[in-house]
Image (cartoon, rainbow, N blue to C red; front, side, top):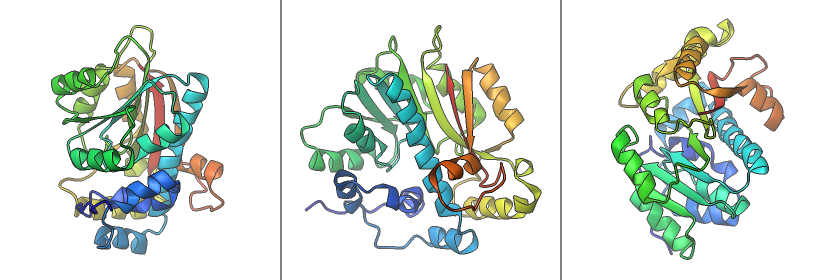
Length: 276
């Protein structure tokens, strides 16, 4: 039996919200190794004051999977880099659905050793997934960690940047992205970002601001938010191409029977994919 991993409530917040998505036997083995016995007060408060929060998290994760599925259906033999991978077992989803991948590298500086230990227990023979303990904003260390774990900068890569831009500066984000710029724009990036209050429909602005304030009071610092204009400017500075956007409104139409987000901008989150 695997000893259950105890983690901070804020660290497992998103994982706990997305539990219904981890429904394969392998993913369930991983989830069973994490201690959820102490109910997250923050998750309880969010569900109480803003019930659609759970749906937003699930739609975000389904959206990332959708982008991965689209890309891998066209080019199934690729390398994947998951920056700020956290506790999410996205690499297990990829391993189960795309075992032909060349390499999957998870990068994070929190709980990654413990996560690797769980993987080693439930998948002792696997050699596709690699773990790089690293602060992603230390770009020199990040680059060497990627190379040491088999990353090939001459071949296309998919970079998953889910749930990370909320916590770092736009300057730090740009520095990380510059590592993956290529002359032929062969590297695909996918990420989510939080919309600034003015980008949300007026009827929902007070709720959006309330959620941001609740998160700010429970996290080391407030989430970074962006207007679409600000995000466009960042992508332009990176010379990003083939930019695609997916709002929570659109993702709900694709993946859910509910109608929590009937208007574009509701949900306060967008997914973007682009090439570097």
